[in-house]
Amino acid sequence: MFMIGQGEQVMSVGPPEPHHCPRCDEVREFEPQFTYKYGRFDLLFGFVYGRRYQLACPVCQHGWLLDKKEAERLYGRPDIPLRLRYGLVFLLGVFAALGAASLAMPPAG
Ligand SMILES: [Zn+2]
Image (cartoon, rainbow, N blue to C red):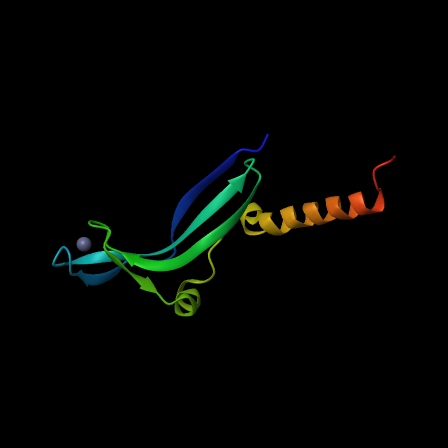
């Protein structure tokens, strides 16, 4: 039986930077974050989508999106769990292998 789940992960990727928050109307320590959404099959394999970098106000969560290339240069590439990062590739490989096997062995009769 397949269990399918999904979620969203937020990771801090660098030291906080002071910025003026227009919503709080005060200077806050904005935290650079990397967020991604993921889907999971059976708790083992998954896939990642909706990756983005953002600066978020710690009080009201107001924030800005950051340019991906610029953020990766500043903070480095984030660490996404391997089974999420390559899960879809793995699943496609399994399906391809099953397809090849069924072609190689046509049903008897
Ligand atoms: Zn704020």
